[in-house]
Image 1 (cartoon, one colour):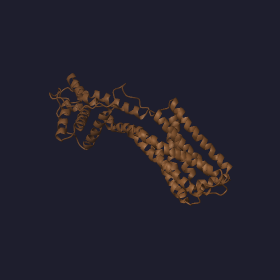
Image 2 (cartoon, rainbow, N blue to C red):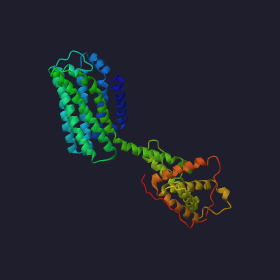
Image 3 (cartoon, rainbow, N blue to C red):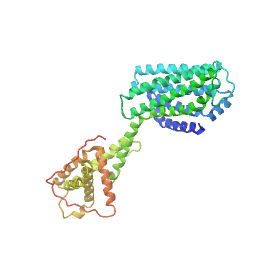
Image 4 (cartoon, one colour):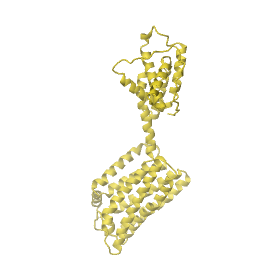
Length: 416
């Protein structure tokens, strides 16, 4: 592997850890978040400290030949422990039983991480080996035992966890299922890394030479395995990201309609505070749109809604699209009429009670579509506004009362 093959994923994982820092500071006592942070940190550190330039610099900086070997082994053992703890919290929550089970695994990992430096200190490894440390010292007393402890723990974790993840993945769906299936692949590769290294070390014990398995085959297998394992734990976060994306999409789609409707009535405007969450901003914008639409009720002509819906149906559009397009047409007509009231002074009184009642009746199915439906209507309104931006729109004749044929609303109640 090239040096960049170590440092690029290390940097990417470190950036992912920085993105978790605010949440980690806010919820320091959350064991799931702590385990996730530990996993990302150890994965990033594992890549960084396993790179040959880092190994060389660390060995020479400390003056202890091969000191980086036990350090990398400890980091990867801690990575395995973080994986186990996070998987336990995922599966069982953060209750007392789950914490007790996670602590048992962490205790076993602690024993391994204490044995590794102890055995290294008892052994003798004076010759610096950047790539073939395991096979070169496979027969050295105490160093040999250190390698066995490390590889044995790695193989055990890589052999047990794939079965747990696969069995659990059959009970769930969505992003969690995708994450668990990715974890299966990652843990299988981690076990393959341990077996590959172990095969090369065992060959040394019997007088053989399979060093290339340890030096050139195992490192890329471990690299891909660690990346897949980390990705598997991050994938379920996609559900939250998808929810944020949906909220942002709705917020942006309501923008043009929100702007053209103008300010809500005095005293009804939602606060414009920069630190509000995106979900709160969406709710505020949605409320602004609804409030302003209600003030436009006298200008909302049910005939425009009915005629536009019939035209959309003749164009073979599905009911959802037909209603959204018709509602956008009625709202655009109402906005233009409210802006040009003076031009229709000789027409019917648009502010009488019958017009108000007819407009509210027409707005009923529009409001009932919820945030998703309102955003869909706003998207059609935006398209309609762009088409008529360079010339006057031909207005449809208005009625002084509601039409005899009521519009056919497409009712799909959604929740913001």
